[in-house]
Image (cartoon, rainbow, N blue to C red; front, side):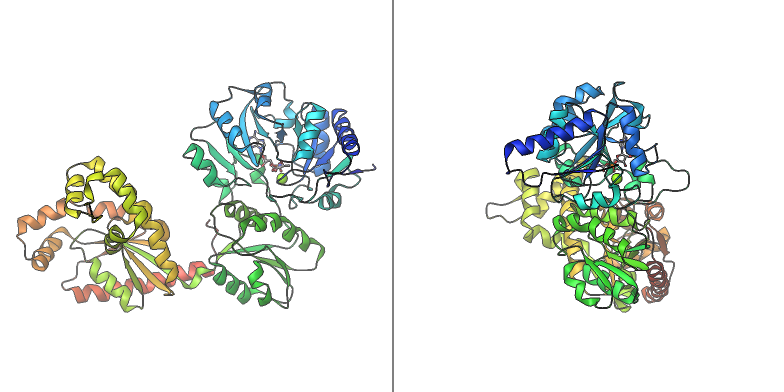
Length: 558
Ligand code: TXA
Ligand code: MG
């Protein structure tokens, strides 16, 4: 079959010529043909989404498993009620804000859509792409266009018309060239048939943008981890090996400086490297494809598929790829890299260990922290950080002021006693204060950890588990001790009566709570603080070794 090529890169050219090409593409589609179309994310391989026979040709051309449904491309929310039933108001809220754009919504389907398009599911994926040429083609054709990414199934997606020709020349009726794709990774897929809505695939629209508009979103497990035997993902496409170049890929996560060093330790003469621009010089012997500057995820998204595709024409035997963090577009870029790697992921922070310590008063946390310091570790005392932030962190002070208006004096000084009284007897008010504090504390503690060059750090926090600070830790440790020993220690340490010591312990969470939630328990039955410090030191030495061991051999987490 001869594949026609329509050049529509320059939309400012002669109007008539452009309209003719758009009509020609629309006509092929209406008559059941296959046309590759440009979108802002990646190129799509389009057919009439209402024509089961035409849609079957898409699956043949791509070699796509036929249990993997397609996205219907439309020109706006007015198309939703034609093909979807029970459209929730939320769908219109999202469409008004993000369409045309890289958001695909999963909604209940109407029977007008053939089973070929939805792979027999009772839902359908709807998207309005942000590309003037493709919007004009759909409008002219007057039908919804079913279009998966235009690559051969399993290969990285196509972000230029040349990529499409490489995979599809001779197999489809036409390619419409609308220039290189501006976004570079596919659309974000959000399932609106469940509550809360669920992210099935991270993509060109960052999760944070969606959350800001509609609140909580559940992230499907298939986004961050490989599927277990027999497990079924909500988006059928997430189960297939994907985006993969021919050579095996290893993704290296962690701070860019560290991941670059980790790759440097691993590469040989026949390795390929995908890295940020800043690190390309580290690999003079290797074939390198850069992702763009480490701090520019827009460019990284545009380049990620090209970087992977290009290796298929070179003789590399393995590929190592640097990976951005998960914020913003980083979640989608990292997801594509990890899928290309079959989730073979190595953490570059292999040398660095962060422990979280928690537990009630009198159990021996202070001695345990001294043991960490004696091993060369630094300790972040979250209670001290919190008190410092009460005086210096303007954003946190403003949030506290908005919620507890009376606690700041005229000169802006915080009346701590008054704040304490407000939350002391009222559980709800305490929760409100904790929400505010934890929200600001986590980034501050993360900043302090990143700035420190120590190979070992401990986070000391009584609220380690409730605050979410445990998420920053490699391992969490509950320091516990038999009740009677705690009572005696507090009496001796603080010079208080037995009755008062028992009251103080009773006001805190019991050891069982910490024991149940932490990764490890460090139990203190020692006679003296020195003896417990020595015991803790042994415990930490062994624990740190096992953490490093696991990191160096790579794990598939995240
Ligand atoms: O940016 C994009 O979305 C591109 C451009 C061309 O629009 N299209 C694209 O299509 O990435 P495709 O077929 O490569 O990926 C569509 C994904 C697949 O993982 C598929 O399983 C999932 O969407 N999907 C389609 N219909 C679904 C449904 N009803 N429920 C759940 N997942 C669905
Ligand atoms: Mg695809």
